[in-house]
Image (cartoon, rainbow, N blue to C red; front, side, top):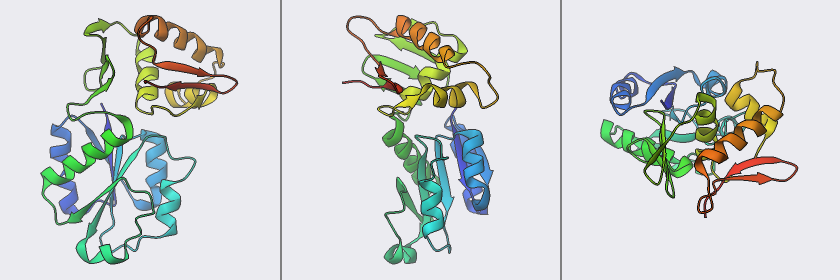
Length: 221
């Protein structure tokens, strides 16, 4: 299940949480000062920032562009209309919502931002050519045929596919998929990649590329 992290959520933004959860996401909360910590711990699909009355500036830009920010996290800002004239659109938000906004609009913009970042569609299914990853039900299919994956194989595929075209070292994959407290070596990644390829790839389908002397990336033509 994907997570949406609400940052400095006001009471009316918190009321949106139930609609987000009903759409298949989990919702968590964080203060602005601990937003990066929350993102690292939860690796959310999206972060929604309450910027009402808050001047945008270097601190938020540094947060979104921090090398410690998990890859592929979508970001949506909630602002007032009178903030737009001075709003710095170079900060790095994927989208923004003008407050007050309907719950449906906020949800739609969050889902659109996630799709633009990861390719995940509104039904919480990531489609990459003939490969389908049902993120809500932990199911994978290729050309309509179900694929039986172990939990780690699924998590590895999900992470790479939601960060398509980004190259990850073996060490980065160990940290993101197995966790910072995992003591296995880089060969663990190679073994799982090989098994994953044997299950989802054939002469017509190639999804995971080896980047020599670096690591792996998910890519489709």
